[in-house]
Image (cartoon, rainbow, N blue to C red; front, side, top):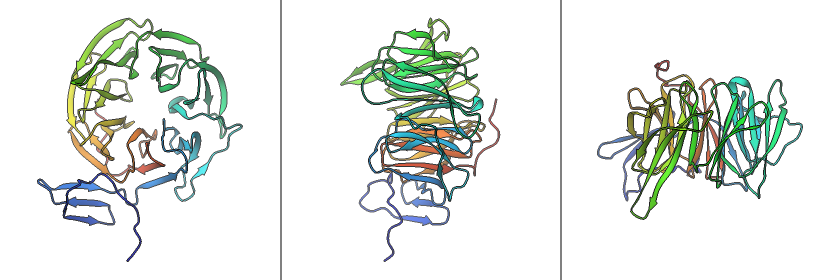
Length: 354
């Protein structure tokens, strides 16, 4: 008997399940009612990085088409993905013990921060004019960041903290604090024509259920502009590349795509069999990547509500997704010992609708 090539998670746990696998493509058909088509990422993994000690990722992001800011055990390093057969760690002048990062590829800038330990938490901002990043400024954060978002121009940073009952706007040029909003948010993004702040607020948590709200606030003053309520617990909030749309995913196993200007829901799609844990918009196509506690990652054409691709085989819950700037690669990481990058350049729908 040949040794197993790998173990794959996410299939239904029926006692008997008839299935058929097309090994070259990785498509797996299961005989259910109705039949279901799955995708094992055969031949699509550009990178699989196994970690010995670190079973939790806090972030992953691309700084360029072939450069990933990904984890190496507990810290973040830069990986050169230009040659899939020879993934290389790019050199640093120093390699700080930072586990959280965020990037703005159009400006070639990115941020690194401490994620564990005691406050204050170190935070450094870099630009990449050449092969080696150049530190532009550093500052101290009063709490560990759980999310950092750039505005569309790359001039401001929105920091969401793990415990602190506030979110903060920093200058991307100096690290200076520009605005503090005294509300505890689960997630927050810059969105809309004026790059206002849209935040996810936990309005109800009880044994009988959960409910959240989206708040839209003025990005310069913090003034509340409008709200929209949802009868479920939200887990993740992302903004489209042109900042016209936002997508919310959570415990109801759906994604809700709304207009950034009005918070009006344009469409809702049932995307997984368990809670949605991570989302990412494709940079140029009408596609959104979704990840779930069911152990799968899916790609959806949100103009037609049709699934583009479906990957199973993850050994833990994915918590971060990131497309490369050219949209050809998708990085996936989360609560497991393996970081992965998939080639998603095939089977994409046409140019993104306006």
